[in-house]
Image (tube, rainbow, N blue to C red; front, side, top):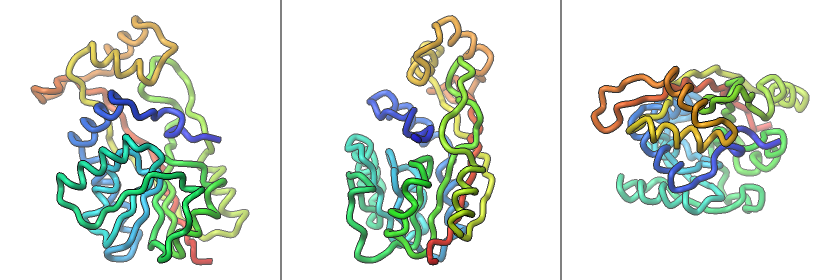
Length: 243
């Protein structure tokens, strides 16, 4: 089953613009990277699988020996490449391709990170070809979609189903609950309507305006005077892949 990230993220010019603004105005990826790195050896080699536009890769790079960032989307990878050049990073490489079709690396990574990407029950065997140490699988535990005026529930495997899969296959693992703010800065109400519409094609403009009226808060930023709050609820599985 496709997870929520795959179902919702279509990297268009506008969605990339909004994501870049959110990522660069907040410390979400830096905070998440610190949590991930606390579970790994010093200066690890990491494969960020399904990296998208790569802001988690950039944050992990501060304390990693090497990062390989992999995604199917060429446009998303180009955003990461631009940031690698901008930040003069020498320890981050990129690869456009399908995780399931790429040959295993000559040297296993210290960790595979799969953040809001893929179905672990389908990808576990492939992930183990890439590391003999740790698999970090991070999934959303929000029960409902945030950026929508509907009451639609999220889809994909539950935390309990992932834990059950790992237990049945005799994997040693730990789970950590994570809650980090990662909302959307906005220039105007009109932009807010366009932003919600990107995620919600079913609601009327009036329903979206009602949602924005109830959720938007004022920001001290001159450039982005509105903010749509979002507390990302995550479960991080740290899995021993050495068995």
